[in-house]
Image 1 (cartoon, rainbow, N blue to C red):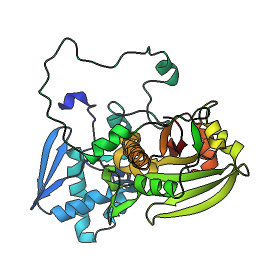
Image 2 (cartoon, helix red, strand yellow):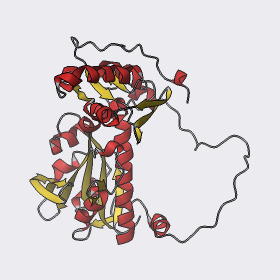
Image 3 (cartoon, one colour):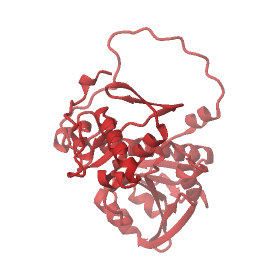
Image 4 (cartoon, rainbow, N blue to C red):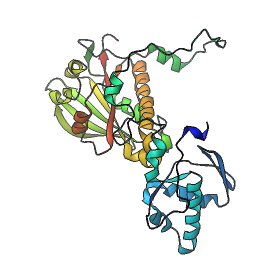
Length: 341
């Protein structure tokens, strides 16, 4: 990929300690002995010497710390070396002052959040005509297909279906403990530093809430999943009409009334924006998609209905869950006993 595809920025060669900019690293290296290798937009950059010092310096460029704060973490005799190293990293487009990031990122990233530059507004998107699925023009020759080998994953994928949540298709809530198991499969821990889904930079920016309606009294239990400790924390009781008001008409209201469980998947942009800037939204979507597939496969294995719901009001869900600033609802996963799929 050529660098001509990306904006060319005039970055400062000498960092101004008076302006005291915030710094963020947008590339992270592979270490090979005494050498650090960066794959940047301009190509391969190799830095030789003091790799531990450089790695420590890059780790502090998180988009929040200012230049002076970074330099103050080093003893006096090392601060000039730290400043020279930072200027070198900026010169190689490895570290950026944060005010340059919007110009760098907005031309080649997802622009779906208000703090990004949106190149397609809602009214423009609404005028795009429906098209058939993409195909290459002509009759291109294809590679020979290998034989399909037996696979448990493929067996579950063949069984996976999206549950019909309209009318009387949903019979009731999922089996006991299925919702908790789904939370664990969706975003639980599989090791000391691992989860059930990949995460950009291992930042784990998603949070899960669970709403469990009780048809007997027109109420629902709302809980938060503490994924780091595998605990479900009860928050409050909410009314079924309040829960239904979060969704567009004729979507899942009838299913909520019969007790379908709802997993709310939300993403914290504060966790990823400092490192990935306006690519943050893209990475939240990737991670949430992996999470959704995990729940679908569990549903296929347990014969429980699962469906992704996107027809909800962002403001209503944000209010219901009391989400902090820059925590955004991404999707809702419905789970229940189903009669048809």
